[in-house]
Image 1 (tube, rainbow, N blue to C red):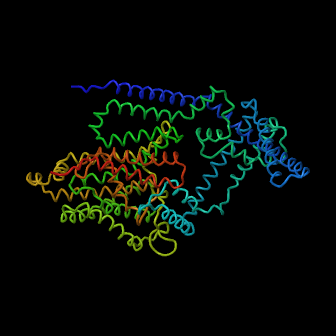
Image 2: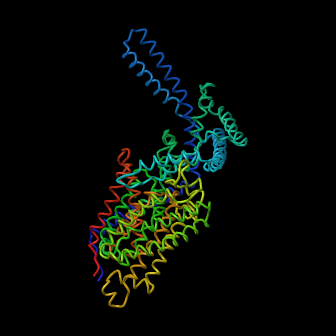
Image 3: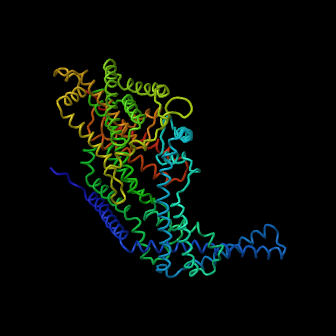
Length: 638
């Protein structure tokens, strides 16, 4: 018998669906406008206005300063007190500035071919220079990065960053901060531009000189000194390296460039700017509409914790759009983080299925993956060969570790959670000593002064980002890391096939009901050994995938919390401490990383308070883990 939907559910779902359709249609329209001539011409007009507005600023400042000087002279002549003199001068300066702004910020003919062509020449000259400079500096940085001096600076900066990122014993480093520290470690003071680069820089000045007559045509009161002083401010307006439509629009918007359009054209430009976000919000509303309409069957299928967290994720997407956060960019970040942490979360699956519960000792396998990666870096291996070597050798190292670890768990049945947690923390502490003693000699890995391995290791010179960049593409502003996701899904597919095999079925049976499995002739200890070993091996692969995606490999205390992150993801996906499926890994990783990434961004946008991101990370991550655990129903084995 089909479930009946109440009238209120029909109305609520219909209203949200209508809003979703409006948003999607609006977003598609905005995206079409952006790719058309109207948005291109409009952006050029905004740029031209911003250039003239910048130039007019010099005149406005000059008028305001003159008014202030005259006001002070008048105040002195009339024996004003010091406070009266300052107040009077400030008042006259403000009045003069306001009047001058009203007079010198109204421009006609912003689409004039002469002005537009000259500014475009300046912009093109800057673009060519910026691209050449970036290429030369990248080559210079690669050369300098090999030096001991650069390693010393990088060590100190990374140590400071790590110390400042430790929250409640956990080290969480923002990717942008890590990249910034790495770039700052390169000293560009000795960088010598090529003659070609110098010629390109000189060409920018030539092109700016050709722009000056156009500026004088609009602002004839500009002096020669003003024009000279305006070169840097105007060049900062005309071009910014790496700018796309959104960044340019926002930069010109700060200078009130949108006011040059009629109300209708303003709306069209705003629609072009927000097209991607509107589509994303529309999709979120569509999902929300389905959630309202199919509430009962979805909660029955997903479970209330997953439904609530999924709804929260959709709500965060909507709020991100309202706060002006680029939702497509955030969705791309969530996809990256899903593939980045997914294989580590998958390592929890065979442990649960085999009956050892949450494998917090998976850090033993992570150590195997780190060792194999260090060997690849020591040998200066690069590309796919380095990645394949790390994976294969990591599995070979993790296999005996997992086998020995399983024997320990088999001897301590009933205390697996406690033992695995102790093993996980102990091996991290033990390896913190080993990292200082292992015989690695590559200068890129070791401390510049003293012995031992550094804490952080840059993967860009080896196979950093190799999966992320493979077949990646961008659609509607969302960057899809195709290779990373394909590898994650491949691992999930292999684990799903294994669970359907004879050995996999026996392992799941042994984990679900050990007594029944023994009665059926299944060797429970052997199945637990297989599950623990596979879990440890997958963890080794997972840390390699994580490191290449993150761009850095972290030793010492870095792996300590990986087991908790993986456990959190699979529990939120619907698994319990005794039952789990591949779908729990995929759904849980996406939801956990999605809520975490979006939640922090929305919270920071809503509350402008420094340092809030780490507080929100703790609240959100621990909150959704606690909710998932309390709603899991206390599943236990029979």
